[in-house]
Image 1: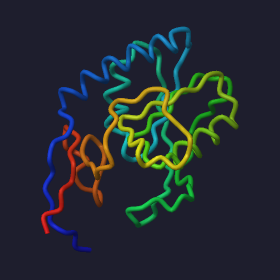
Image 2: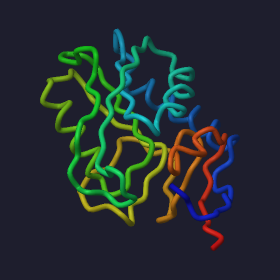
Image 3: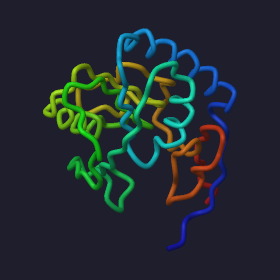
Image 4: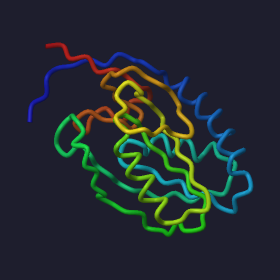
Length: 179
């Protein structure tokens, strides 16, 4: 498949992301300071870089698990039907859980995942999103912590892709199509 040519304009620098993660890690530590182990649940695939940096900053005992959910299929717009493509390996009943999302856009995916995980009776659960696009919200949900609020722009980098490309960029960039 051929994709239209584009350039990427930096929106959020790697340095800004690192500084924000340090602050968020302190807030998460304070929220979960009495935990015996925090289960950090990453929503694949876009959150993997964020999770790696976040857990290294957490001064808590952590376990990392992943869940893959999709509401986009092959398109660029949400289908509003969330499918679980990969479930957790471990149990979260009676445990402290932090759900990590790359972007909260319409809110359908995070809302579905939160309901699913709450049905498994965690002791305490909170959510964190690297990016939030509140102008796109269709479901009433807000992450417990947000890294950055952004306008309705198509973004890549820091784990977030366009057609499986650009995940390796160390910053968040806005995609600008050139033709």
